[in-house]
Image (cartoon, rainbow, N blue to C red; front, side, top):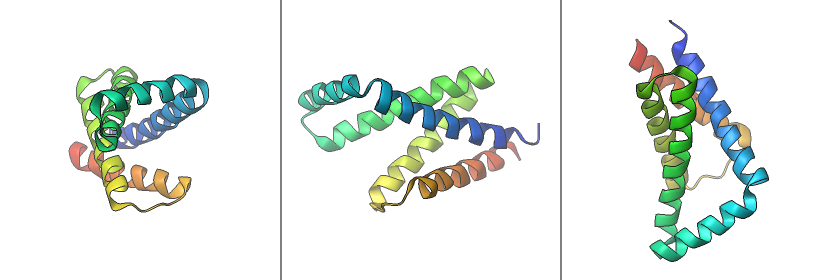
Length: 117
């Protein structure tokens, strides 16, 4: 039970990679059309981006809830991932894939260490 924080962070990273691979390779055309439809509805790129982040958080919530059979872990994982993504975008810093993954893993790990300690 002591390493549950580590497993959550690992599965959240896997979930993020799955989200990227599924939506940007398999369903890219659908995702672009959906983004266009949402953009026309909300009339704002910022709102579109927030909806995208919310849908991504929903994806992580579903994956982590199923993997750990825990509604609470799903909510917490989706929330911390959403906050890290929003922070990363607001700061405007552009880094590579490894930096982005390390940032998420570090902050998410620390969050769950605090929760489970």
